[in-house]
Length: 215
Image (cartoon, rainbow, N blue to C red; front, side, top):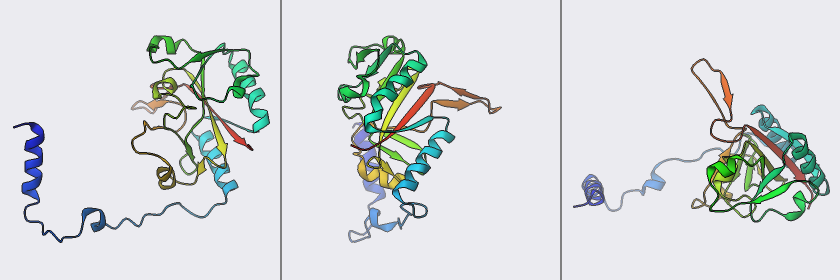
């Protein structure tokens, strides 16, 4: 008998005295949770997102769509980035204004090779205003999870207001549970027992978020 069979057998024995017409588990517990805290306009949600991102020590920028390429070029130049890792579905015009070498997301790339890249630029799936969280789901403009965990500098572009939601429940409705989800709230950081903050522990030391309005 396998471990799986043993576990399922124990489950069946534990449920042996449950009436067949008993209330289903998913209906037995009250789940009338708040979908969001307070009522906000779209503009207020975007402002709250920017505020919470900054509170997590992310660097927040705002621009119109036409201003995105020069802004990205300026951010990369200001950091001294010469190589930029790009997901396969990143819109080409985003980086057309920069004097950088684009590095593709290859399955064969090693962690050491990714660590030598100066920056990574991605889109996002959704951004949560109440928690200041960016969610990546591995879509073509975001690439695989590891490309945003190894390079030390990550620039994430968020479309506003389309990709901004107020709360986590609203975000979950937009996300597929079978996708490789990465939830990002600020740069990678941790604190020891004395609360000394250290950044860049298991992901980028610097997170920059560009909130882009317009088509």
